[in-house]
Figure: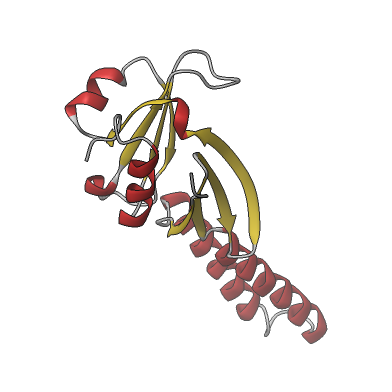
Length: 168
């Protein structure tokens, strides 16, 4: 069997918490700028520079992406913060999956009530969400449902690995 390698990166939508952090950072920068007439120049410039740096960090670290990598039957999902810092994620063995189907299909909904759920989706577009149900995963009591947003290339690679459990 040939080696399989498929990779996909999906930009995560900005949450309300991330939006609040960004607005707060902008507010701090404005406060720093408004302090110019009231404080000494060097102190105000230092405080403003610090607030600008904090705003930069707020914008960088509130932007996140999911990276899906399918390598020889193992799906690895990592989180990338600010397009530069990678948080290693989980690895799931597709060969141990019992069902791969659209996340909101009747088959998945009927099985998902008592499962541990991991959500790696980036948008609210439920048409693109797929679920993988794995019966045996180390460190998880019972079965696990992983929800993610694969593209056609990823779906084709998964279908080539496990055509008997893949539903489209």
